[in-house]
Amino acid sequence: MLSVFTREWLEADVAIVDGWIAGLGEYEGRETIDAGGRWIVPGFVDAHVHVESSKTLVDEFARLVLPLGTTAVVADPHEIANVLGTDGVHWLLDASADLPLDVYFMASSCVPASSYESPRRALSVGDLDALLRRRRVIGLAEMMNFPGVVSGDEGELAKLALASHVDGHAPGVLGPSLQAYAAAGIRSDHEAFTAEEGRQRLRAGMWVLIREASAARNLEALLPLVREFGPHRMAFCTDDREPEHVADDGHINSMVRDAVAQGIEPIDALVLASHNATAYHRLDHLGAIAPGRQADLLLLADLERFVPELVLKRGGPVGEIPRAEVPDWVKQTVRIGALGPEVFRIPWPDGGSARVIGIVPGQIVTESLVEEPLVRSGEAVADPERDLAKIAVIERHLGTGRIGKGFVRGFGLERGAIGTTLSHDAHNLVVVGLSDAAMAFAVRRLANIGGGIVVVDRGEVLAELPLPVAGILSDAPLAEIVERSHAIVAAAAALGCRIDAPFQLLAFLALSVIPSLKITDKGLVDVDRFELVPLGVS
Ligand SMILES: [Fe+2]
Figure: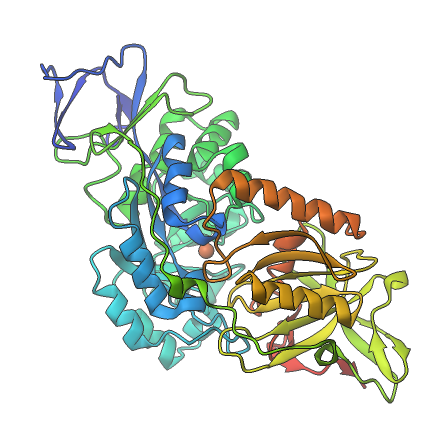
């Protein structure tokens, strides 16, 4: 068995009583599990995850990750919080209370992500204070407004004052700004992309949460820090993983496997995957095999694959997990009026150039382009010849009818439209299309199915992934989600789309805190200048 404290393998019996570890040594038990020739390690812990990224309900997520050895997660529910406010977070807390997976929460500090986004309702300092009073809410989630913190914004500092445990999010922040960010009480960052960024964070006393998400993958770049300093003050996290990524590749266990394959000592990788996450989050009853700890144990047959042979959760095997009841109110979240094709019109009486969002394949950053749009009867229209599609974002929480419109290049669509209600962080409705009629049809379909992702052409739905829970989660089993995910990508390809993961990209075009040109229901956002900009360039 692994001692995470001395970082050594011990040969010992592990005595378990009522789900807790009673001792290590030589014991006789009423029931015995023979672990001869096996490695016993603590259950894996995800130090920072948005469970919603799996598109599954939290009970299905537990069914997915427990067999992979993840026995506890620390979740930031900011996707649900954007759509359903604190009611949604309380619902998630209740829905995860009796699961065999331990789900801890951080109170989402940045809803909305910026003032250019429209969630259902902003989370106030009072909302966060109320959330922090709940038992499994252990701190404040990623403080994404790093410019606000560094410049001493009163509102952000008031949030930080609520908790002694605060996650960070400071991509690219270095030098004096990083010092100020750490001095404000932020204890970690999962946005380090380079070893130098990680080094500065460690030296500033921050924890580095090494992230391997579906889009942002930082494991390889940050493992040199483990070689340089040992595994102290670092832990593993998945942040945002697509359901098919977890199903095909694994969860935290895949990070252990990959780290070991890249030459990290198995013991160090296992400590990064378990004890360090619980030490950082002050979850002292988890993350170690020692007297008085919760008996979350994995039996491993080898130190290469890290797929557990047996998962013991609170001392026993994981039984069947009952399906969660989904209340009706979390399914009624797409509120838009009757929108016809006319709302997508872009009058262009004076001609001239337009700002165009340029997609960068495989990246969630975009380019800010300038193009002269195709003009027909005084309107700027899509132009498949030059890969210029129309894009619109419609506010969908309160039915205000607010809509931002523009153009996007890079999807390669030749006809039809694609649309989604899953769009970070406010999850308003985003639609990209070649005609106003196709866009209106996609929007109507999304409203009818309560949200999700659709691919349409000529008044027909080619494929769809319904996400009726808050417009971002499915209540279907994982296998169905994965199958439909493949179908929508294939349907988009049939419309000419040349991107591998088009809906992952689509989901980030409305996120106003990632450069360079983005679009929300309020219009085009120049993220580098951090201001709204008009479509026309004069
Ligand atoms: Fe995150």
